[in-house]
Image (tube, rainbow, N blue to C red; front, top):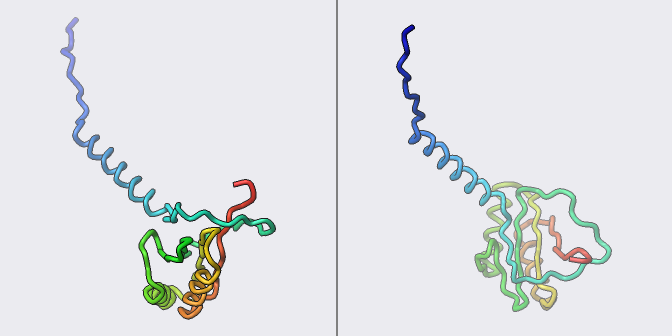
Length: 137
């Protein structure tokens, strides 16, 4: 009986490493796209009688108003004029039905919230919602 010589079977590790890196890059990029950018320094007011939103539109624009009255979108500070320009451009690109969520600190003076809603209205958008904390959060 002849004995066969064993052949060594090797897996090309370099191509496996390439695949792993591509998967890591894919998941990092998609995770960054899906995450909403909200200003965590804003302490929302308490909502008592309004149910939470069941479904969120992907086109939603979140405008944050700090207790000092400063506005930002995705943590980028904006002036009222630049906010209006951004919202007008979004309306022209995607239509009038773009939802806007206005997040304001619970201690924000209403004058600053009113100023933000006026800017949103001047841009031609009308689907505005005010964000608040659900009871117990």
